[in-house]
Image (cartoon, rainbow, N blue to C red; front, side, top):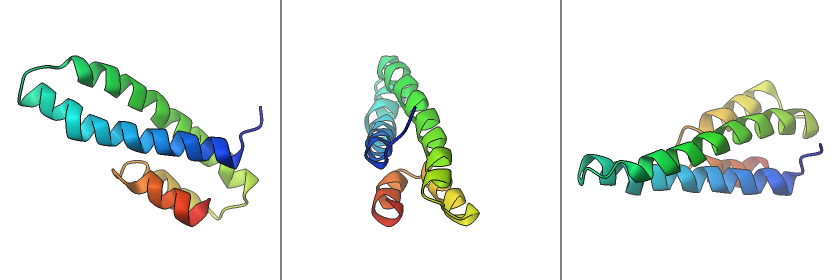
Length: 92
């Protein structure tokens, strides 16, 4: 299966949004208002998107001939709340 840059951008955007929703909405609901249900749903979606993002980054590393340091930065950006948006602008 061929992963296009456009598809990786979509995965990147969805991963970033899911992380922001998890941190900004679901976690406060869980710890302030004792409503853990959203963390379960958003956390699972974010986990799946995170795995797709890292796998897509490895694929893009080969396809776009990134250096190993570029790959490292792209993967590290996946653990920063707005990191994937930076990746889209700088590397894609």
